[in-house]
Length: 419
Image (tube, rainbow, N blue to C red; front, side):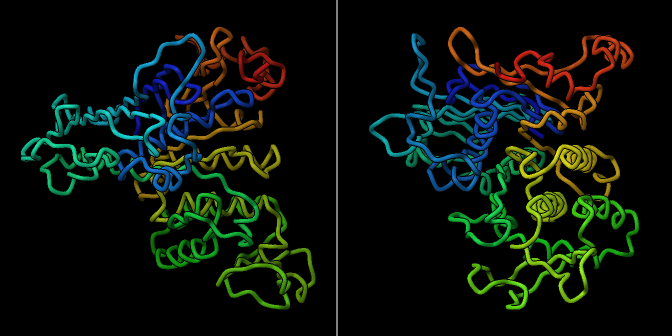
């Protein structure tokens, strides 16, 4: 997983370092820089995936912008030529990248890169050219928009653990489901597999997950674990069945745009002849929960991903339930044993009840408060955690018996409200 990331000169983040857990939640005021943190990881992933062109950044879920606006430009602050990302992963693996942005170039370009494993330099690029251990690269840097890991990973002799770690980060996407895409009314301009970043392709992904479950019924533990995740979709209490099929005129208006397949839900409270509802007529919250369930279970889904505005379309109780399930699927030993669930997740939220799903005494679960410096407006990232040596009883006493959501609402968590 991604253990630590230092971000310098990226959008509102002048210089910040974050040490991550398995599940990472960022809270704070509007415009504080929460999404910028996710996009910095997206930029890192794009650099490892192929290039840092608009197409690749959009595929990661990074908002499109002109190159110069990716680079910080605070008043009365002197900047170098580049924005820099320094990442540390498991197994003593490091990846550093500096990207240059200028008005003369239509895209960001690589200024420098370095890949290390166990303290040894494996790959690098600088003004002197490119170097890869065990390869004669000719030194010349012929493509300043394409990352060296993508160019040389298949021909260089690198440790298996290095390939595994970097390729996991390469898979990273930022998901931000939207109702029109979940319902199939809109098509994604840059679709990703197995799920679109905004929810496109949900019927096909649901079909793949359900088919896979049916083939693994003999593994009762794995079957039951996956059921815990899929049960999220039933939590709102009205649906009893989910199906995938072509759009039927008796269920979907001819004026509604649909793809080759659409989702149907059975409303258990309705008469049988009128109980089948298409995705277009169904609850957006149920669609969102189904999206999250599929993202957690699909074998082709990224093992490291982000959900921006994780409480989208959900009421407070369901927000907490969904996050509890996501945390269990990401951190639970049984899920890892059966290769279910993601390895690492990054989240943003504006819903106070999202905090109540987290156990701050579990180092795998981390909450960060994101705010803007009163001095220069740069993004500050502070981990919310108990004091050193505190017990749970100490925390409850200090909080006056209140849970985290109450502390957030009452402005007892500095910076969380952004006021």
